[in-house]
Image (tube, rainbow, N blue to C red; front, side):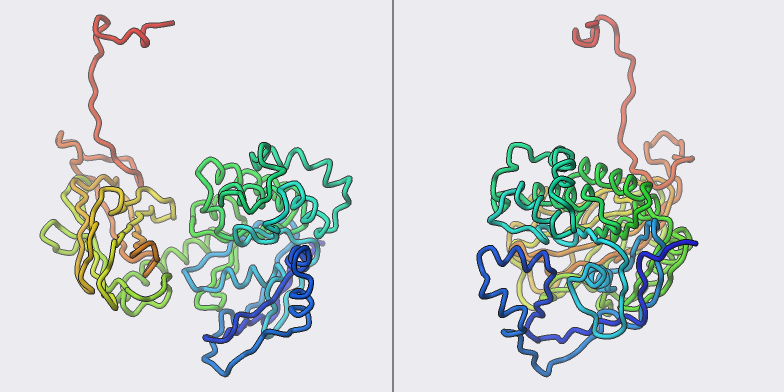
Length: 432
């Protein structure tokens, strides 16, 4: 008989907009704070200092029920604001539910935010032992795994340095190494892996796969649907705080991706699944001809542009527009960033239209989604996933009269082929 690792029944979490921040704390956070602030910890545990006003309430989660078997690898997907992180915080015992319950059978190792559970004044070495002790590990057990943790995190030179001096990347590497190597029964990982570089992300994915093969349970939140589909055997799709689907990963991913096409047809100004501080918002985004005629379908190699319309409460100072083009399955293919080519080093009006000229469309046959974001003075004003959806058909990208066939969802690159004469060949090529 299969064992249950997590059981959730009628789970709900209500927040109040404008209320003082709730100070729900894990034992790990409490012990870490006790190093320098015992009086504050006592007040926190007794509930002093938390005052709730009668403000607007909203449900981040509502009526969530599911069971997860031990040894499952579960991907949690959904748009911004769907409730994914709230669910993981409840399962990690960081946040209490407002209604219902979540039973977790076994030790939980969680990586939800960069720095969660680490005390900044303690060294990397001290934090490893502290986290292991909180997970119920004996010192001898932690010592046996210590070298593997440090090697994975690649922080050997800084292991005796207080972690407050670590970069975000070092912090993340050490936090993940601790969470994965101290063998919790359940490993919970949020989107924080996006902070690391590509090599580290690949290493983390491999480690999570190893954890799963050892029969432990993994919950993984990511916007990279390709990674979710490759790693997970089942999926939970959340939308606006409610569970839409819990099933094998393939049908969940297919249904979620189909919903993104529907969402893209909704006027951007009416979308609520957006990030940023709300001081500006996109009102339209679409692929177009250079003359700004919308294109739902284009051919590889045709001249195209991305059109973005925005509205802001005030003129935009030092704005940065970003567009990331994804394959339909969720793999990021290319990133367009106005800052990289020194565009808009000025102030833009409070409303307007910007265009990003792509030149000959460098995409093969397939369906594509575009995420967009707007920053001003290094603050994120607006962010939308799947703001535009379009398809590409085979076309004469290289201008040779031959359509690019047989490739799907890849970026095309200009290329030149020539025979390199032996006489003209560089010496390092001839060297043996």
